[in-house]
Image (cartoon, rainbow, N blue to C red):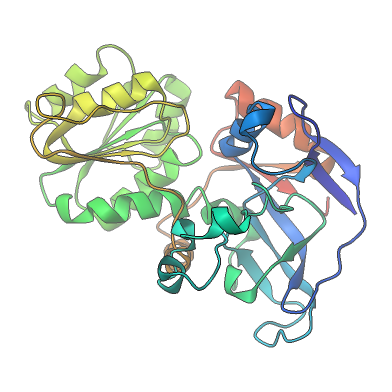
Length: 346
């Protein structure tokens, strides 16, 4: 089978030939129909050797949907031909957090050497993929695989981040979305669907801001040295009750801190290496700053249900598996509009 792998530290993704894996007891073999391309992959491929916690080569792809091709002994809850989405943040399954469905916060995964697919375990960017346990599968139903696959991260991650702040997003409130690309343009739709808040989008290009307006942002302004003052002006000096930073770089984290209101939330989602100091006089009174990770299994079901209701959709660009290295280059260059999706069977 063909697979897209990161093979050597400092290298670029390569399309290789591998044997089709065979599911062990309790495992499921999927024939992959779509796999998402994510900035997290680029972050992994930018790490020096001493920061990598898993061996190479690595089959990429932590967003995946497919159909069941075969099952291992003992698997009875799915059948060959079932269309499913893969829940990516795998955990031990038995710790307190996993028992709540929060495998994204598994307390034992690191110690046990459990990694998400595409971020340590063999991922979805291949013609076939092994899923370790049926609890990591969610029925896809009649959802379009290309539309659904980014929701397993680019939908789930912002949904999880926004859900925490919903009690503060009452009528008359404001939410700021910094970075309106793959995750941010979905976040805008989630905010519009689940809250009455005014949504202000910030990004560095007019093209990204056009996408933000297209998916429902009330205001879209350039992210620059004047953006904090612009948000303050739009909110009559109060700031925003919730600020979601999907870039996470030092400048955007500083912008997020400058935009947040008293008792507001700053949520740093992006992997840009930024941080925000917290203390008396450094942030508005009782502002909270968090850095969440992915989302729970139950929340993935909720995100897919939102998609079924028609209130969220993902702007996608599709590539055949042989063109996956080009997709990564486009993502690196910032020219992907929305989310890039690999079609492993094409």
